[in-house]
Length: 280
Image 1 (tube, rainbow, N blue to C red):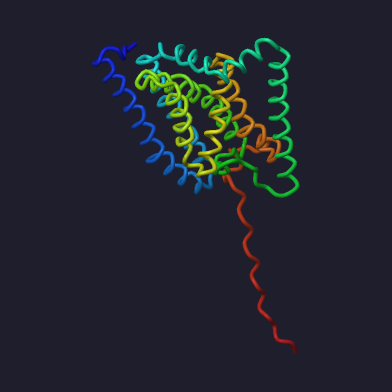
Image 2 (image 1 turned 60 degrees about the vertical axis):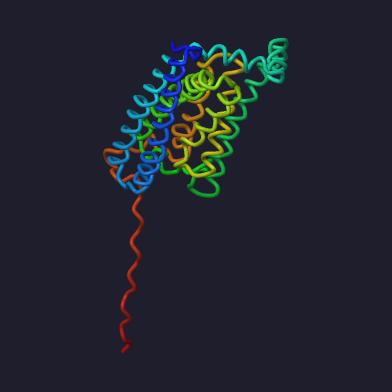
């Protein structure tokens, strides 16, 4: 662990932060946006699966590596940051209510579960009645699985995102920001903004929606004191989008990508006009 009280160590902490931010920026602007534009043009499941595997590997190694480096440099600041945020008056008051009334905590958890289930059901029913496009926040239609093989990759991507993104954006990066700036607000808000910007390939709606969802995950972490619960919540939400809904709406688990190589059904060819025959 690096000690910011030591000028040399503080410089190393800032260099670590700059390195993490530069890596995220380059990955988001130069790769994520470009690769997603290419991915949206793919018409065969083979190419889609190759890209999904690539994203899974890069996400695990890149985000996992940045998390490890950030925690090695500033991991000891995670607990003090959490304690300071929990001491904010409104957070402390909310924690007191939850601790004094376990039934309230149970009610909040049950309410969240019911809300997620209800939104899922409403989304499925709406798509079945109105059309074949799944309602979503941001441009994520292209990434939704089209067959059984893609569904497996969607599940792995969901679990991976829950683990590495929560460890990086709720634990490691806030700790690094807190170690360098000494400001808890900068650490929390900065990590949420970066989390939203990382999803810029989804468009403005995706950035805003992701930042809001990130704030919810951050609240879960702060109020429970457990990063594991935030990881589970994130993974479950992504599994809903990339596994449950595609299965419920499109029955993609019944489609074998090996026998259906095209990810999109071919449009029927226009019927050619028959030549008019002169009447006798």
